Structures are given as C-alpha cells and as structure tokens.
Image (cartoon, rainbow, N blue to C red; front, side):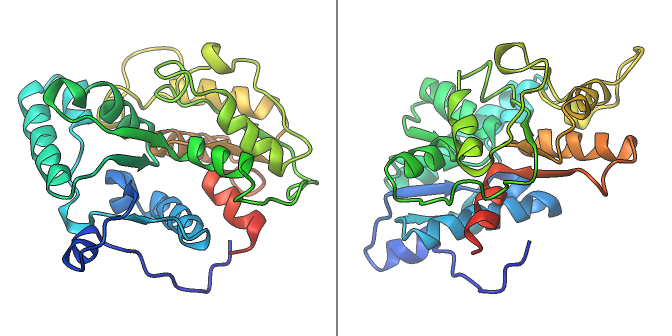
Amino acid sequence: MMQTKKIDIPVMADLHARGERPEYLFWVGCAGAFDDRYKKVARAYARILSFLDISYAVLGREESCTGDPARRAGNEMLYQMQALQNIEVLKSYDVKKIITICPHCYNIFKNEYPDLGGNYEVISHVQFLDRLIREERLKIHAGAFADIRITYHDPCYLGRANGIYNEPRSVIKSLADDFVEMKRNRSFALCCGAGGAQMFKEAEKGNKEVFIERIEDALETDAGIIATACPFCMTMMTDGLKYKNRETEIKNYDIAELIVQALGI
C-alpha cells in the first residue's frame, strides 16, 4: 500500500488549548500505538478521517490502556484503576463520542465503562465507515477489488458481543464484486483464539490451536484477501497464513486499509 502524503494528526490537548472541541475522539488503542502491523491500520483510519475532513482528535501521550486485558485476565483492581483514570481524562476534554479501531476497546467503553460513570456514544470504525458510505460522504468506486475474492472474519467483540455483523459486510461489498463467507460466520463464527486475554498466555493442551482451525476456514473459501476488523484477529490470521505457508499469496487487511487502497489516498 503506497502512502506518500503526510497528514497531521490533531491532538486533543493542542485543540483544547486553542479553544477547539472536535466532534470525535479517535481512540487508537494499545495495538494501534505499539504493534507495528496495527500502526498501519491506525494510520489508514486517520488518513480516511482527515481525507473526509472529519472533526476528530487523538489523545496522544494521554491515552492509556482501557483496562480490558486486565479485566479479562481477572485483575479487577487494575482494570478499575485504568478505567477511572481514563474517565477523568475524557471528562477533562468533555468527550462525548469515541471511535475505536479495536472491538475490545469498543466493547468495554460501550458496555462496561458506564458502571463507573463513563457514558459515551461509542462507534466502531466499521460502523462509521458504513455510515459514511450510506450517506455518500465516502464515495467508493464499485468493484475496487474486482479481480480478488475477499472473505471476512467476524471479531467476537464486534459480532457475538455486540451484534455488528451487517456493517463490515456492507463496506466490503461496496469494494468487492466477489465476497464469500466462511462456513462458520456471523453468530456461528469461530474465535481467532486471542480474545479474553488469551493473546498474552501460552496455548492450552488440545489437538489443534484455535487460530489454525480458523485459518483453515478462511483457506477453504479460496479468497485472496482475508478482511479483519480487530488487532487480535489480524495477528492470529497473519500467524495462521504463515503457519500454512500462504502469506505471500493471501493477504490479511483491516477493512480501513481496503478503503485506503480503493481511494488511493
């Protein structure tokens, strides 16, 4: 993916100092900030927001982990410390709307922060992209990936946890003429194997690791691109392709990266 034009990412503290209040906080998340592969997704999404002149900003150095991995792993005290700290930072900037590129961040902001007083309108990046396309603010040329079959892996925290099934598929279908479902999809989709803090622990005993089982579902579709919408899923799908020695012929892209490629921005 070629990206030559630099963009300036607005930072909340800088805008606040000038008396400006962006409509959306773009929550980058730990993966978007620290994982080399998912940094590309964060950049891609920021590029889309800037291209469309969306009023947004990031927290930059003030952003901390949401506490989701700590809570999933059973460390409730650490989770609440992280969450309450984040809530205070968001309160200082009067944040009302949050866009996330990680389903785990989305889920915890939407469903668990309200218990601690953090109430926001939380929007997944795929929901936002779908809305922009339907409102014709984001204009995609049909068949941008006309010669490539695309399949989609449902992240657990978008799909089963929050019922977000149609929006990512709608976005992909606006790009591709050949979209194919895996045999296990939507509410029957198989986890990538990294959720629930499994990303940070060794595999348990069994006949086959979950990510291998899932990549086999994807390979059965004969797709050239596996679309994902979660940093954990991206890691596991990419590892699966490497395990099967298919990483040179089959690519794993986040939906935001597909949009950037289609727009050529």
